[in-house]
Image 1 (tube, rainbow, N blue to C red):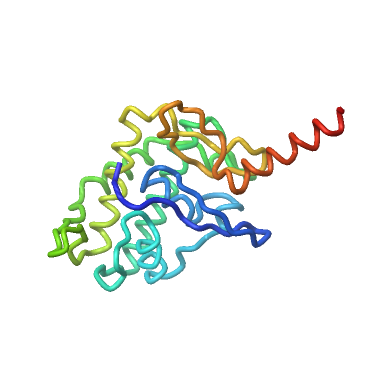
Image 2 (tube, helix red, strand yellow; image 1 turned 135 degrees about the vertical axis):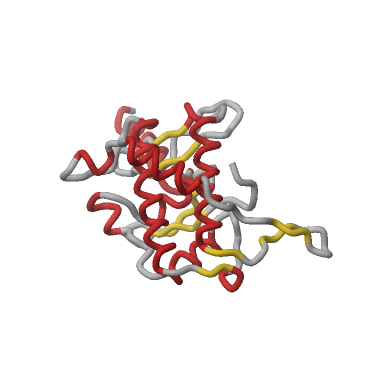
Length: 208
């Protein structure tokens, strides 16, 4: 999985801001929308500039001025994202609410989409005079190849059986648990984890 600074600031439908780290670059892409009514409600990739803006927020921390994204790249990004949703749901056994079960049922076409995009030329890094890494100017296709390769690494790697859906009944964010004990349950302790603690405390007090 791609290294780098991790974590995204998300905003719930109620307007609550919280920090979410899905543990992998490819799973960060799932936060931009996806299949089904919930995915359409959260759709963030409407224009090529939206994809460039997401790249800056992702763990790639790619300067939008150093990447060229066009309408074809945007369409490919959404196609890759939807395929990743279905492949991830196959691993987690869960699925966001939808009127059409096929929205989240992985097919051979989803695997073909992932492998097709992963076969492209990936991003190339360079070392700065300050001893830090940054990405060379790139095309949108290189970014998507990097995301797809990250997914191949995740789905075929040692953490493939740790891809999970948040344990809250009304949260469907997907993450990979890379912690040593492998006991992560929540998308974020600031959100679903904290709400679970509050409910559990109230239940204990009611019992007492």
